[in-house]
Image (cartoon, rainbow, N blue to C red; front, top):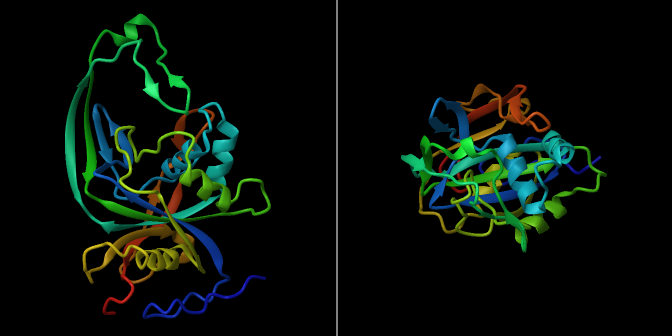
Length: 260
């Protein structure tokens, strides 16, 4: 059995659970988008990244293709994660009228070009959308993988984030990160504790002792002002749709060193 995480030294005792190694992601960009449910032409966003988005971000770094559905599904199944809004930023909305063409090309894997598919009728009309995004936000993600012993490990993911097979983006392809996505590793008993420890590593944040909104697995319990939320943010990769139900807790956490 692993060693116990009895105290983080963060104004409170730890959970007492076995220590687990967590990978921390630092999502920082001029614009980022955590897509929610699409309503007609309105692309609303969530406050925290979906489980499918984080799985997709990691898969993109690994260079997986869309048809690698089983690999995507297994990564998403093993993924245990939470996130915290270290910098709130502000919500903005775009009105988009993009005229797409069959000859459009995109940037993807090194040395390869991505094209478009679809018949001629696909491109007859402009692509009209209202899209929300977060400007100047910063979001911390803590994650670990269940079912150890498989070929894909946290170290594999960390190495892929350091040298991704494709350019990484945060929600949409134009939303490029401002800094390396991998922040580092921490050992903790829960995702919530990993997020608190991770906030201490964001040394270039403005001084702010206020609470930080966070989301963590409901199985870890509710704390403080936390409430339970039910999400449909896991993707059924073979079918290309979102399904299932994931229960999370959403509430405030305190930055290390802040007054209790």
